[in-house]
Structure formats: structure tokens, C-alpha cells
Image 1 (cartoon, rainbow, N blue to C red):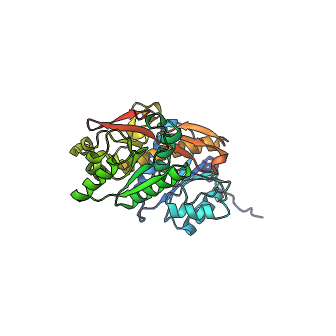
Image 2 (cartoon, rainbow, N blue to C red):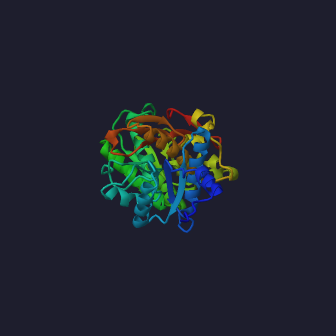
Image 3 (cartoon, helix red, strand yellow):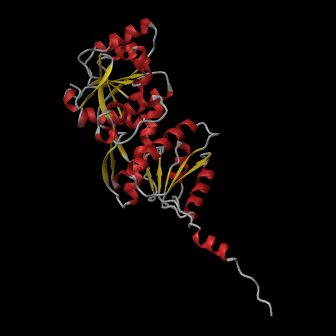
Amino acid sequence: MVALAGPSSAAAQTAASAPAEVLPSIVLLLPGQATPFARAAEAVRAGFFAAHAAAGAPMAIESRESDETAAAVVAALDTAAARGARLVVGPLSRDAVDALARGSGPRLPVLALSQPSGAAPLPPQMLAIGLRIEDEARAIVASLLRGPLAPGVTSERLPFAVIIGRGPLERRAAAAFIAAAQELGRPAEALELSLRQERLNDLGKRLAARPWQAILLALDAGEASAVRGRLPPDVPAVATSRVHLLEHSSIGLLRDLDGIAFVDMPWLLEPDHPAVMAYPRPAIPFSAELERLYALGIDAYRIAVAWLGGSQRFDLDGVTGRLRLDPALGGRIERWPSLAVFVDGKPQRRDVLR
């Protein structure tokens, strides 16, 4: 009787020595190269892996791409769960995050990289952090009335003046300024911007004709420079990060913004901040917008590690701002940016307005 031959000794040794597949702890799910978000995804991915390298943690991370449609994101989450992942970081686009937030909840924990629309609490397995212009506007108003910027404004119940620019981001910021003021019991008057000389002169007269709590600039850098000379010198003027574009510093535009306060993240305002110094700058120079997304990738990694470690409540000195997670926030990670004022064409970090 002839016995059937088994695997050769060499083959058996090869099989025995083959390394087991390393299953990912984190799946980073970002838009693919064929989507409009490809460059944003590249910046987030670079920041995420820069933070991972700086941490020196023996943690497997798998990067995957998606077209950011609801069906594709759900399929990617199912694949991640089947691969044994413990956490997914992504998606990035608002529509994809909204789709997840509206559903019954993802199969495994998800740290979304955009804040969803609306104010409803997120599913229990979901956290969200983002860089929405609305969050900056709300942080400015809250800080002026009851936070770190309050010492710079009057205690009287005066109205806010909200100067509204022409772009969609500026209009979103203006709506958030007005809503935040009203929620805190303060009136706000909307003033539409026109760059025509006679209209700019009229705007200056309206601003000078009455007292204001503060002037909130829902403007980009060019629009803010156009109105700067019409702003009352004794009233604080505060803008979002839309006025802080790194590329403008080389053409002298920032000198036209002297005296205007604005918020932005430590990554762009505080190079000597301990958290900022811990991470390398991008290998390829980015625009201000992409630098912010690179910084978002860094903080996303830090939040993911803290969440994997079991943290349900934390305060993090992040490169995008002071970050707070609390169950009372309904899954949304609160971000408080830093304050600066333009002086001699350069941003100077401040803790208070005056």
C-alpha cells in the first residue's frame, strides 16, 4: 500500500515561518484620488501618520480610500469590522458624516473628521471633530461674552455689528455669529459689505453712529483689509481664521489688517507651543487651508489613541486648539481656537483683546 505524500519539509518550514497577518487597530478612511477632496485627504493623512511616527507606538494603521458616498462608507466600515479593526477615523466630507449620524450607528467606533449638520446627539459609537467656520464664530461670541475675551469688551448689553462678506463661507460665519449672539441674549445687526467706495463710506458712518459690543467680521482677508479704515478705533473687531492666509504675508496684505483680532489654531499661531513643536511640518509646503487639515490629522490621531485607551472625557491641548470631550456634548468634540491680533503685518498671540 502506497501512502499519499504530504508537504515537503521545505514547504512545511515555509508555512510555519510565514508571519501571521497583522490586523489593523485603526483604519483611516479618507476620500480617494478621484474625489474633489483628494488634496484635503492627502493633508489629513500626512498629519495622521506624522503623529503616529512621533508617538512611536507599535500600532497597526491601515489607510483606505472611499468615494465618500453613504453606501461606500458603510461598505468600508463593514470591511474594517471584518478585518478586526478597533476604530475607524473618517470619513471627511460633511455629506458622508451626516449619513452616518442619521443612521442607527456604525458597527464599530468611528471618529468622524467633520462635524455633522444639526445639533442632534451622535450615535453612541461615534465622535466628531471638525474645522467648521461656524464653530469658530460661535467660539468668538461665547468668548467675548463669558470667556477669555470678555475683559476686552464692555459689560453693557450693547449689540454686535456683523459685517457680512460675499462668499459662502463668510455667509455661514455671519449666520453663526448672529445665532450665537441671540442664543446668549444679545442683539446683532447684520451689515452687508459692498466694496464700492460710496458704500464703504456709508458703512463707516453707520458703524460710527452708535456704540457696539464688538464688530464681528464675517469676511475674508481682502474684504477685511478694505473695511479696516472704516472701523471705529475704540470697538473690538474680531474675525474668523478666514483673514489669516499665509500666502498673503508675502504680498504685504496683512499690514492692512493691523488691529484686527482673529482666531486660528495653535499650529499656525504658536510655533513654540509644546504640542506644536512635538510634530514635524509637512514635507511639502501647504497652503493655510491644507496646513489646517494636516493639523487636524495630528489631533485626530491623538484623540483616536485616547479613545482606544478608554477615555470618555478629556481635555487635550491640541494643535488645532483646546479640545474637550464630554458625554454632555453628544459626541461632538469641542474646539477652542487661539486668539491673535495683527500688529505691523504679523499675527501676535494674545490671551485677551486689550
